[in-house]
Length: 363
Image 1 (cartoon, rainbow, N blue to C red):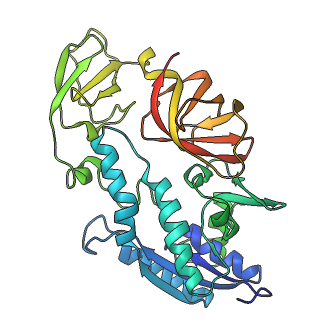
Image 2 (image 1 turned 135 degrees about the horizontal axis):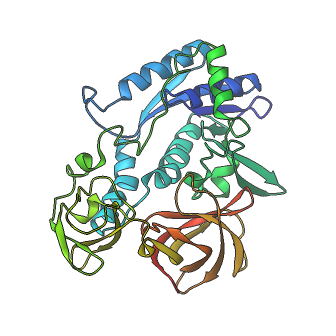
Image 3 (image 1 turned 180 degrees about the horizontal axis):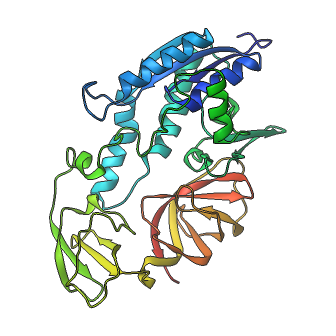
């Protein structure tokens, strides 16, 4: 490895963000190559599959920048390290976040290892986040563009992964990124941002899930236990969900919309409530599988947290529970606290790490 001219391999996805990340690295004087990762096997003629188009766009960007483009298929690793866990959690009636595991296991593990075998000093991606190094400690920080900040999805990264990664877009906002792409005539300049879970694409979530999980009908009941209708199976619903319940008028005197308040695995029941109901809010949660990016804070610890992406940070207090679990007490009740989802902790703009929500209450 040439430390005077470090070799950086950037994950080139065929989107505007990674395209600009590659350009910025070149402008900073790095020896840049690119890698296109295919993480999900599907037919290229599938109406929801964009892999062929994405690869073509990545190739055009690489050619324009005169950098070498490598391609690799991590579908096997993705299935074993991310997707099997995704299915297992849904079978338990929980709502996992596969993009968090994808970053930890695929983009900053499989990709990192592959890039190092190609002689890279570091890898880079188009994530909106920042890395600071103070003494020997690496800190993951929120991006300048708070609306695009992706530190929530990166909270499982460790010191070794952060020390070998670069986020060139961390100091930019999305408009600046698109302006740079337009100025450089990138084919990706006006390309729509990808949304949702990467392997599902734009297809309806329930449609995708039925391919892998059987429909096990059960009862949808109200808070008093009164039967309303049948549901298709717990995995196809999430806490706080409104769309897709298809509960029309005639079930109550109120015209307010219905929301999922609880999923009962033992009885295969879904409890729904109307409007901004108190049972949709909880002030305390228990979480496990705690991961700290740097030194573990002394508990109890006052900080802020997010229980979903793009949520405004919420003041809370973390305390030790038992057997590796933590208890989080919020200053204000939180809507739709969802078991299986990630809770991510912050001190100002520094991401401390995160945990997986197990249960919620109003102690």
